[in-house]
Length: 327
Ligand code: HSE
Image (tube, rainbow, N blue to C red; front, side, top):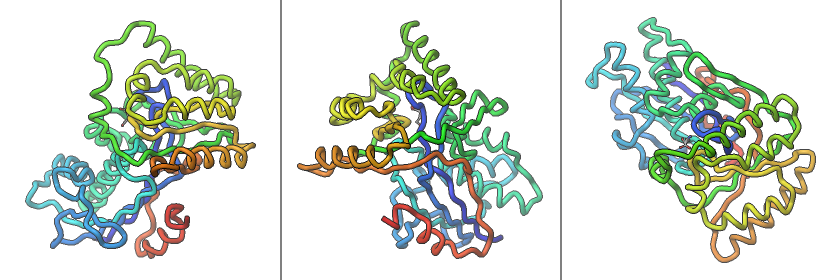
């Protein structure tokens, strides 16, 4: 069996009011190179050949996703084809930019590769079904697979859109991590009717922003969430200062990226230089005493999963293309 080299975009989910239902794929990528090797045991290495901590089978989401698919097609734990994988991530794990989703999508791709040998094809609907068995909210996994702004109701009802071209995005990334489970444990079990209505209004405003390209709808949408941000923001240092600053410089707004702790800031790309210099200076000031945040600028990705041709020089491609290595 040939090796497999793929690229999957990071994502930002929720976008304020769309808790668990929509997200955007970003042009910050995770690369996965699978080497089929019967002597290995699903280990995960960095490009520098360091064994990564989430290689352990019970923490290894790529393996869990792969195994979940193959066990449905007659494979057993004893005869799963083995591989090792090299990964390069442009946003690290536990920051709220969908690293788990990229691992789940990657696991299904290597399972598909194995099944192709057996002349079994898995269509997109089935792929999405398998993603959701591992992560039962679609707002990261489905944009990661498809690219774009994606709303997912279920495996058959997916709405994919392109965003207005003049939308600028930047990721403010704290130096600590939060697991999705911890972050979800902060949420309430039941919400007042008014809170749910506020989020429903915000979701419609998001759609109207996409159709009309009028940022006034986006600005309102980004302040409508009552389901998750109020309970998660208190975990993030300087959140009040960040919000005040982005209001002061007239960004459109911000949202907590997925379950956090990353934040995504929305602004007018026509004035990108202004926003970059302001945001860079602000983050540098917050970091004066101690490095707390990093900042990355990005755009929506509309490609989703990319499977590279076999025999491509995968390391060279990563070194030539990865923004994090070019900095
Ligand atoms: N919608 C999810 C959450 C995204 O907010 O918990 C994280 O995977």
